[in-house]
Amino acid sequence: MRLGKYIPILTVLLLVVAIQLIISAGGANYYLTQLTMSAYYSLVIIGLCLLMGYAGQISLGHAGFFAIGGYTSAVLTTVNLMSHADSSTVGFLKRLGMVFERQDLYGNTLLAFSPWLAFIAALLITVVIALIIGIPVIRLRGHYLAMATLGFGLIIYRVVLGTGFLGEADGITGVPGFPLFGLEVSGALSRRVSNYYIAWALVLLGMLLAMNLIRSRVGRALRSIHGSEEAAGAMGIDTARYKLATFVLSAVFAAVGGIFLTHYNGSIGPSEVTGMKSVRYVAIVAVGGMDNLWGALLMSILLNFLSLRGVFGSYDDAVFAAILLVIMLFFPDGLLRAPGLRHLTILRQKAAALLRRSKPRGAEDA
Amino acid sequence: MPDSLLEIRSLSRSFGGLKAVDEVSFAVPAGAIKSVIGPNGAGKTTLFNLISGMLACDSGTVLQNGREISGFQPHRIAELGISRTFQTTKLFSRMSVLENVMVGRHTRTKAGFLAGVLNLPWTWKEEREIRERSLELLDSLGLADAAGELASNLPFGRQRLLEIARALATEPSLLMLDEPAAGLNIYETREMADLVLKIRGWGITVLLVEHDMSLVMDISDEIVVLNYGRKVAEGEPAEIQRDPEVIRIYLGGDHA
Image (tube, rainbow over all chains, first blue to last red):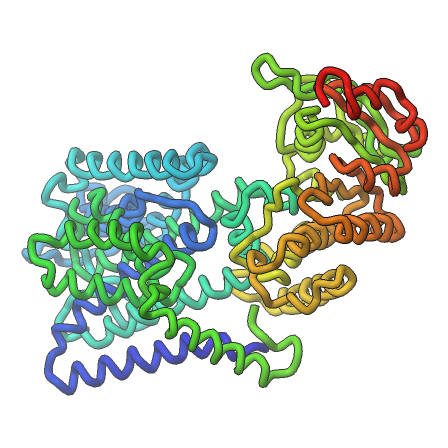
């Protein structure tokens, strides 16, 4: 059992708790709202980091998968089945708890699908669409893959804007909370603290799974594909299959972020689906250092938090585009490996090496 | 030829009007070192790419132990025990020397996405075995001291060795080496020759593409000579050295 590799996760857990305590003690709980939202966006980042940084494949359409998750969940939990209440199917689903009655904001009784059913449906739809898009597209490389995924994102955006039951430009509101082990993912002020912890629990779970993956045989295969697709193939790695699976996995991460943020906000709109949102996700992974999950997470929280606080004002999108430009030009290995900050990375590596040496053989991390 | 590990029948591949490999046939006997030589542009690397599945052939067949493998994806061919190196080394430069070899264990291990994401306990043992086998291989090729280095930090000659170690990690029955001596000095070339002999000693058949005649003549059991994509001679080194056509290609004629 190798406990050493869980130290970063435990450290972040402590930080998460410390930040909450400080914020709450300072009576500034409204900050928790943006930190919660940043956490959900970070799920997209974790998935995209696996795809870009480890498997070496770009996606400029991840806002599309975020939206597929969020919108599916929003539609299914706000659709009113009252007019079909007498049908045997609805009755059956109701007995199973998959359809239930609730009051909407205006006090009307609504018969809608349960958030858990919507969650499962959203994930299934995400997987199916990711496969449909991924199978032809993931064979493309470099610019071509970037353009194809950008095209996918733009299609989703225009579909959202043009489809009545997706709320067109208004989006979907009145999305109910998501019940989770006695708690609830929702934006209610009384649930601010618990929601902060739910979001961060999901992020840390996502990080744990992602870290596990990159340290495994599959993670090694993905990094080898990044290094040389030809050589990876010659080593017996089914590169097409691995790239596709990673594409689908990263789409699922994005969808989960979309689903929970939609329940947290109680709504989702087309602003979540724009091409600029996808560019923003790419920019954050790049600024974090591509193959650096912790760097990506740090940058995701920092930049999303600042953006959500409105620090960048009307220049929000411009800031992220500029970040992408500057990183590509001057710090292609990410900000954390920039010359001025490089000693931090070296220090961390030395510490890790020291830790390794103090352990018996075979106990070290990959 | 029942003892052929690999057999190539009338293999052809054109690029536009250029016939890179033109109706080439030969067999590689099990346990032999067989070399393919020829001037630059003779189609040697194309031939390797056809056998390893990186290129599709226009016509002809590749047989492994009598079973057709032409048209298979590269990863399938690797699984079947045919491994290769590249003329310009294609190491995973951002991975450590050890990790490069560990990737080579891929086909002989099985932890998938779910097992990886969940870090299932049975994978720990597999990972340990991958690591140990890879370290053993590095050790036997004299690279153990560099296990933790980034592959791209190795000097050129050792990168070559690492590529061979990585290919051996797949447990091939046939190892295909694409110009392993290119860029090496005469001492390193000598060491490379010893290594190839050692590999054959481990029971692995070797198919060698080489430009360097000295290396080939010393260690090969059989040689195939290609020129302009066509096979012009085949035989033991002594025969090849006497072959007038080969002498013309290498020492004079219209394109020295």
